[in-house]
Image (cartoon, rainbow, N blue to C red; front, side, top):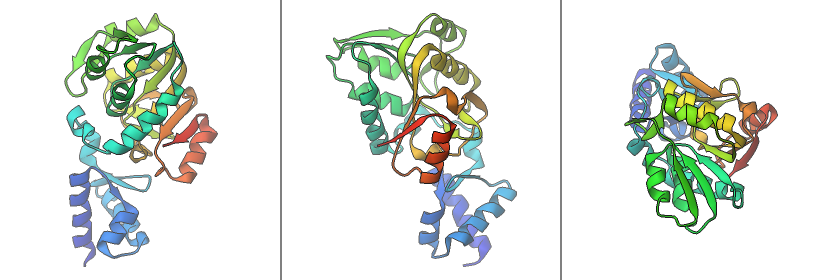
Length: 253
């Protein structure tokens, strides 16, 4: 297979799956991992892909934020494992913030209905799940609702968060890296996430490892503002060590 043909197949797979991994491409295409890395470098120079840890993402992913429905169908089992591990961090009889997102949404689905807990959330989907839990004292943060994510955002949301202090904030993110911290494509979402981190005694980020090295336009927190990152076991050991050195504890599920 010629390099040009191989690179076209790499682009097609990246656009179909939203991300490509070096080792998987090498196995599928029957070439060495170094060949794939050279291909990815060439495609990045042409502006077709952007390199991230362990692979690459299509440039379209940087420009168009996937919908909540699209994200809900990705890595479902991994997200549920992460959410289940997050339950270990729940404060007994305390208060939490539950950010909008698919992994934090999995936390809402796994919360025991009779659990004694105060929950603040800007997520319409999480609120609808928790509204029937008899043990939960639920506060829905108001604001403009983004159709893309089903999250309340804007000044109303931020102002409400400045007047509260919670035990734990469970945060989602679109990307994380040692260099750039925690990032998201939308400015209004970033402002709310930043306020959530500031409102919590303990800030915990829930994210699958595919988001490692993926930097988006708006940063909402540096890594040293975060206490714990809960991710999956596919996170590279070297990356995990770099994250720990930057501040947060890294927990894998």
